[in-house]
Length: 401
Image 1 (cartoon, rainbow, N blue to C red):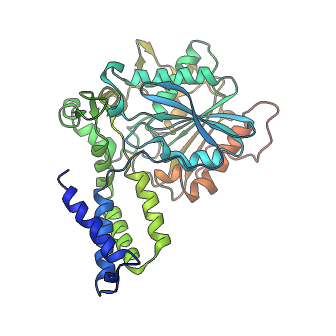
Image 2 (image 1 turned 90 degrees about the horizontal axis):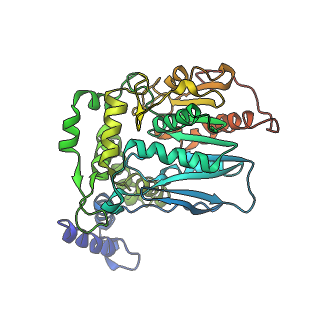
């Protein structure tokens, strides 16, 4: 609100010095003034949830829970393999996995967890804990079973492993495969800046300094949340030089009239800057359970007084994927799932470290499409029953493609 007058002036300046029909565009500094105004507007803009913009399928909500919607990408012809893609609840919207969905659609029937911004959930809906997250995943695995494949990206690897473990302990149907990508199964391994922060600060610090109440203008008024803008600042603070250079390059591209490169910058930051608030209970549970107590790898994770026992999983094949340059989930953190799922036959287990890939490259971009996705596709094919299409055999626990 404080920046509103400056934003108005920047919009006027962009029009005066950037509109093709304005006589002011011929002034010596016109391009620089227009580019500066555009950059200021981009930096100070409030970004809403992006659209899916997937031409190949129509997203439709098939189950709406207070804090999450199960979205199905409806296609003209049903696909052979059913996939539940569990998106992270870690500050960004599920649309961040647009590239993941688009790669899966040609051969898979895809459902995704589309998390609701906590500021939009009325206080009457009650709290949302990590245990509720596990319950959501269990409900949707039951709904979509049998012959289901589950892919979890980053943060949900822990609740997904917990959900499948609890289903196996009760002798319920479990997914054919679990694909876990860049997640903190054991945050003690190769600790990153995220892990070090959780280790250095006590639980009380997170509760006192990072939790806020939703202001009156939102439906979730008075709900305690971890604000998305704080998470966004945390992401930027991990690589400030990279973002500064990206915006500086964007400014020069605008000055030079390189519209294609500038559009690519806008597409990335439209997604990256769109953040959501997380329920405080869930965020604090995750900090304590995953990053401070290491409850899952220590065999001490409970969901509603029920012990999570990954060793109960016997009929679900496991593929873990990590990025060599991942600075959010360090190398070995996701691979730790294999030691926990010790009763899954070794021939049904595989691990892959993608060379030269950072955290976001695990599920989006050229290396995801060319290097990582083929392994995910082949793994699902190979563990889809006797009628599955054969795929090239790959060496288990290989490090490089």
